[in-house]
Every structure is written in structure tokens, then in C-alpha cells.
Amino acid sequence: MKHIINIIRIILVVVMPVTVLAQQPPVWTLDTILQRIDRNNVLLQSYELKASSYQYSADAATAWMAPMVGVGTFMTPYPGQMIMDARDKGSLMLQIEQDIPNTAKLNAKKRYIASQANAERATRDITLNDFRAQAKRLYYTWLISRQRIRVLEENERIMVMMKKIEELRYPYNQSQLSNVYKADAKIEENRNMIRMQEGTIAKARAWLNSLMNAPGNQLFEPDTTIVPAFVPAAVHDTATLAALRRDVFKMNENIRSMQLNIESMKKEKLPDFRVRFDHMYPLDGMMPNAFSIMGMISIPIVPWASKMYKSKIKAMQYNIQGMEKERSAMLQETQGMLYGMQYEIRSMQQRLTAMEQKVIPSLQKTMDALFLSYQENKTALPPVIDAWEALTMMQLNVQDEKQKLYEMIVDYEKELYR
Image 1 (cartoon, helix red, strand yellow):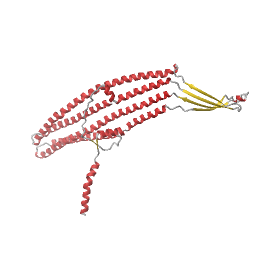
Image 2: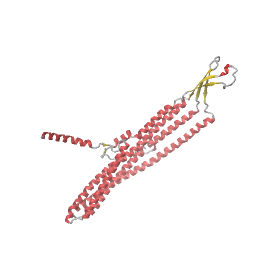
Image 3: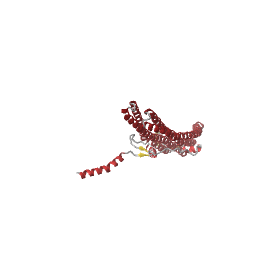
Image 4: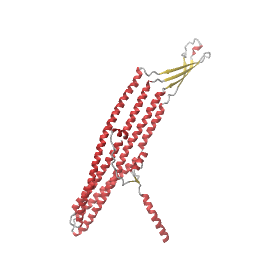
């Protein structure tokens, strides 16, 4: 029996750590999440499907109309009419008609329709850039919430220690009962702040899962070692921005698509063709079979027909000029915005450095001095609580400023590659 118990203990020692490790959620880096969004997001998949549909629509543009076949009578007298000759009985007629479009017109229309797929893919890139920015905000919010929880837990440990000291001193009339209650209230307030951060983390996890097209309750943890870095662009000239920004690329593709549409409309002045074949079976057996072949051509250059495509071409040319002006204005506005965001980020970094290297150490020293004096029973609890609150609030303010800095970096990257 003892031998069996020892074997069971050995098995438990081996299996238990493996079981614990298996229950730990995986750690996903930000790059992993961004790749999953790019690959799995349903909305992004829809843009690729729409882009593929334009290729099939372009192929359909080169198709011909189906031939028309008709059967009827030809020069057949109405019932009750007097027929002077057998050949006046008329004929049965078979008619076949086929429209023959101009190949140049079809190919021009095909190129125009196919060009719209690039604009749809550019829309996907714009949406992906928005999703990437949203995912970064959620990920950084998660990291900041973790840091806030660590600050709050450490400060709660200090307040719990002060509460225990007050409880020990109270029976000897060295402290007041109200101080015990006040410390207890501060502990509960601190725990409520921790609960709020845990709710923020759960919300960020659920939103990230939705962006990855995963169940909202799927568990994973962020890489807490990541520190977002600000890497400003070397230059912000309009030519560089035009090459980076996806919305400018989409506008360029729209302009190119409209130019192809203009070329397609210019081909409207080319003629189309039609061929018709008629075959007659006379109702009089003595009459020979007859046929008729007719070729037709359209004349789109006449004034009442050319007015349509000439006016459309002019309208699209003005539209292109307007889009080019809009593109220039967009690039100029973005240039100024990026310079402003860059200066703002650097200013925020300087403020954070001052808070972390000067303000918090001073408050920490004040807290340590008062706490030491409190432990030696030279200072009452309220001044120590005030110093504790000041230190806690400043530490949380630093985390708030860090979150703002991270969001500013995200906004900068979003505008740079929008």
C-alpha cells in the first residue's frame, strides 16, 4: 500500500506542473494580433471578394449580345382576300439577327471595370490601417491597466500594513479607532480601482478578439515587456506622404479609373455593327426559296448622338481636376498635422521624464520619511495617508500620461499610413 501511495505522489508531482502550465493563457505579441486581424477579419475579407468580383465583371464586359431568331410570315395576305396568283400566297420566313460590337469599345470598357478592383483593395488597406490603430490602442490600454494594478497593489500593501499598526496600537490608546476605519476605507477604495482596471482589461480583450474574428471570451495575455517607441518619419514632404498614405493611393486609383472611363467613352464614337439573315419558304410550291442578307452600321458621330458621350467626357475631366486639387489639399493638411503631432509627442515625453525622475521620487521620499516617523510613533496616521494618496495619484497620473503618449504615437502612425 505504501508503495502504491508513493507512486501516486510521484505521478502528481510530475503531472501537476504540466496541468498548471496548460491552464495558463498564451502570451500574444502585438505583431501576432495584427497578423491575425489582417488574416481573419471578416470585413477585410469582404473587400478582397469585392475586388475579385470586378475581374469577373470586366470579363463579362467583352461578351456579345445573344443572337435573335424569329419565325413568322412574309407578305402573307389577310384571310378572305382574293388571290389572283398562287405566288401571292406569301412565304414563311426564318430570321437570324446578330449584333457585332466594336472590339475596341469592349476592351476599353473591360480595362475601366477591372481598374476599380485596385480602388477596392486600397479601401481594404485603409480599413486595415484603422483596425491596426484600434488594436494598438486596446493593447496599450491593457498594458497600462496592468501597470496601474501593480501600482495599486503595492500601495494597498502599504495601507494594509498601516491598518494593522493602528489595530495593534488602539488597545494601548496610541491610536484612534477612526484611523482604523479610515485606513479600511482607503483599502476598499483602492480595491475598487483595481476592479475598474480589471474591467478595462476584459473589455480590451473582448474587442481584440472581435477584431481577430475570435470568440470574445478567448483568453490570452499581452507581452508586458513591450515599450512603444516613437519613430518619427525622416521627412514629411508631400511626395513621401503620397507614397505612404493608402487614402492617397486610393484617390490615385480612382483618378486612373476615371481616366480609363474617359478613354472608354471616347470609343463611343466608333461604330457598332449588325448582321441580319432572312430565309423565305414560299407557300406556293412553284416559287423558289429566297433569302435576304443585310449588314448595318451605327453612326454615333451625328450631333444628336455624340452629345451624350462628349458631355460625359467633359464632366469626368472636371471631376478628375477636382480630385487632384483635393489630393493636394489633403497632403498639405497632413504634412502640417504630422509636424504638430511630432512636437506634441516630444513635449509629452519631456513631461513624463520630469514626472518619473523628479516628481515621483520626491513624493516617494516624503512618503518614506513620514512612514518611518509613523512607525516610530512620532507622526499620526492622517499625514501619512495624505502622503500615500499624493504618491498614488501621481503614480496613476503618470500611467494616464503614458496612455495618452501611446495613443498619440498610434494616431501619428495612423495618419502617416492612412
